[in-house]
Length: 229
Length: 407
Image (tube, rainbow over all chains, first blue to last red; front, side, top):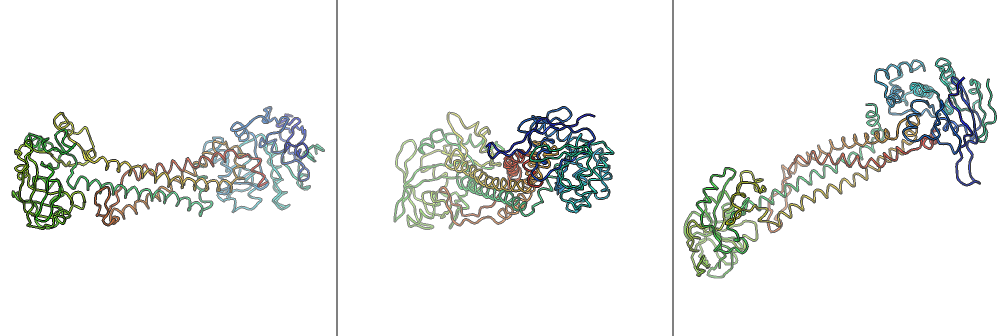
């Protein structure tokens, strides 16, 4: 198997003063293989979100490296990093975070516009993604006309449509009830199996983490346990 | 296209704020169009008063005459000059004049003044003298006819039909000469300088009194079919009559203080525009900043999914451009409405004297193409410039920090 993303001794500390410094992520080294469906689990404040931000190039590590398909993204910045995220990483956020003035279709289409995909191809891929996430016929609705579960499905479609190497999801089910949360995870798992796309998500929900094929347990910024299931 | 759509929809997320910002820019533009229109109307009135009273659009004199109005510095070849002027098709009218300082006496009082000998017929279409007759009759060619300003008449305690004696010195010899006239008309120019000091007689009588031949003239006053010709130093009249013998001067050269005032007025429009749009720009900066702060998590998201900082700048500039364009359309419509009203009704000034010139008429606003091209262009440009600072701020948003608000 090939590592899609790997970190080596990656640290993210907040604050300069030794006494008050918060070690959000401390010397974490992991390798995520292609096609994995991995959950980063742990209590609040354990460093799950910070680690996902580091994996996604949303934050720069204090030390250590983060490599995506052999490219160290820890040293990237500005437009180069933006382009890299656009082409290689998909994000799903806890609060859906769709653009409220865009319809579901337009939210999905937007990232392809950034990629320079031509209009007909965009249209085709949007229709395809809406079908995959079970939202046919709802593409014209704006986020405020969709339920939480539907909005998160749009967010999944938005993350997948750019055909990234990895999708990072930060507590994607946290704002959903347990039934919808499990349904969403099942959808993500199904897409993972169909497309062999790598998924890494954080959660502290026992029912959700049971769907993952690998669990990385975090505590106080460090990896406590890394188990395959 | 999707970026423009996003920018447009973003504008209407907070409709009330957008309307307020639009009105701020639009009303600034409206005010500028209206003020500029009134300024232009005021200038037109001022220029009409300067050129339309007795000054004309341009004048021809012998070189040196204007320095102290020396009666001996007359032009010898009036007929030849007239022939040249008659041939010039750009001229609307011209009129020869003989001018001299004079002691103006009545039975009751005496005053120093200025005597204008004029060609009554030609003067009709060249100056305002005939239209300034308040009472009595305009000159009809008689040797003893005299027109006098109403305030000078009051000073001399005379009225229509009364006798006036003019005492002056003859040309060349400098001998004192006297001539008796009867008041045929009382004038009211609305200009203190003219009403207090000037008397007008027929040019033939003036030449006779000053011992001048009918070929000798102190001044030709000219009006152009297109008044803007007077501002063109390359015009044939100025080329032809500016030589060692004669000089031809436009009304701008003859009234340096007025041209200075015109320049000041042009700058005042610029200053008013600058102040208005500076204030509007501050409003735009504030409004765009508020809209960015409200959407800070969203900028975090779109940056996270790969939007470049330059693309965020572009998005904010599109929002500013659309805001400016909507504002300009409204501003121009309102400006046109206000401008049309001032153009039709005018703004009453009462009897105001401006730089020695009475401006008793209403000032009528005037439209100019720049009000609907240059002004909106600068409104758009300044709005975009004002948006640059908040756009830079939005482009620098760190996704991981912005997302803390929503994760």
